Image 1 (cartoon, rainbow, N blue to C red):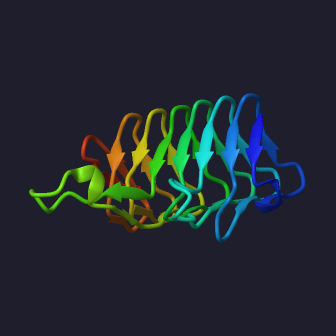
Image 2 (image 1 turned 180 degrees about the horizontal axis):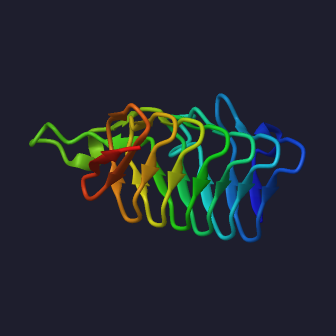
Amino acid sequence: MKIKSKRSLRMHEFSVIDDDCYIDARSTKGVHLMEASRLGKRGILTTTSKLSLVGVGFRLGARSGVGDYFHIGCSGGVDIGSDVIIGPYLTIHSQEHLYADRDIPIRQQGTRQQEVTIANDCWLGARVTLLAGTSLGPRTIVAAGAVVSGTHAGNEILGGIPAKKIRSI
């Protein structure tokens, strides 16, 4: 395991970061793993995309777990509630590139940071991707392989690319 900015990492009782993870905790709010939470094996969690832009940070709620091989970008902030189940190969992007000006290369147009939030009691299947600004309400289930953006009220099942409401719970 490799941890950058260890002073910004807070781990509560029984929280775990599994083997071979890379955690960059340098951010305004830090990285917080609440009690009995777990980050799986071989994951990457970054809070800052470049030295001139310090990111917001990450919070994993109590009794929540992220599966192996995750990649979580927390420049805009990522807040995961309590009792959340997340399968392997999760990707979260709380930052996206701007591209509106056709006369400037996309790489030079900058980025937009927007928080990603997952409320309590959600279940995300394997290989789910959450894009900048995504908000999942309580008791949301996301089908494996879905790509999710926007705000979702909760008590529903989402699936597809792009993810859409399949049905209410």
